[in-house]
Image (cartoon, rainbow, N blue to C red; front, side, top):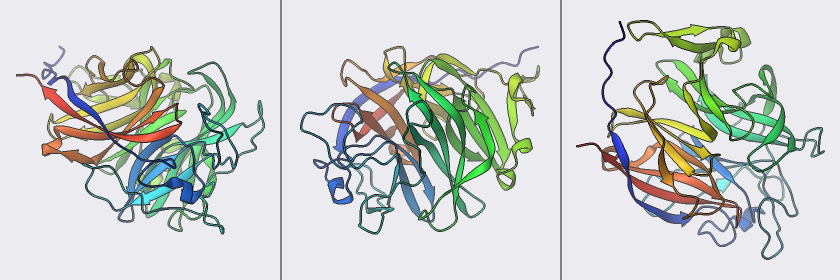
Length: 342
């Protein structure tokens, strides 16, 4: 007998607004001070009393009118931090991890050789066991829009406040697996990883590991479905992982929302809808239908809507999130109000 499910409560979003620009010479943060003229992504995690913003391919100089990633002073990734607790007027970045010249430092090195290792992109960060971790993907080649080839995905670790990072030899996931790009949340001592594959045209799967065993490959288990009473089932066999959201999902973020008392998932929708949002009853679902969070018609070239639980207002009814825009290839700060069903 299938147990009865609580009804979904998210009816839509309203009052979607761009609050401020986060990166770029024209932003209030004037990131050109750190040799950042253009960058993207901006996923967030909390560690050591700060919020850390994780960026992807970063360029210090760009020709006027340049669209998308590219330019001079290329670094594959960068990391900023803040203690700003008020998201209403944007986020004041207090600094970056920098090199000896004061420019934002590349955290995870890459070959920068096409069809070998083009770049190394951090997809999410988290704190565990007194250390900081970055989940990353080693990109072999950027393909058609929304697709890319990946060598592997893995974890990097810092034990010196983000100053230096070491790529762990294990665990790693194959470049064609469903855990190339992840969103990470700690739940009752376990780390949950919602994952998608290389690009924006696949669904979401789920894995978990005890925090204390995050560096132990065999300790990871993969969600395979539920029992008749709704209890989750897990397996150490990644091939048995069940897809919990069927959609064209890229760059995702999953958080608990106190206003709805539900999980929220935001992501780049490779199907052309822009940025989507869904409601989940449990970490594994069921998940509601996709709702447009920000339309690609309103913001052409948008991608990577990332949330953080602390950046909400009105009991979680208002959410704040980063959003990358291909032109001018920088990160912006957005807000939206959730609309609950009557």
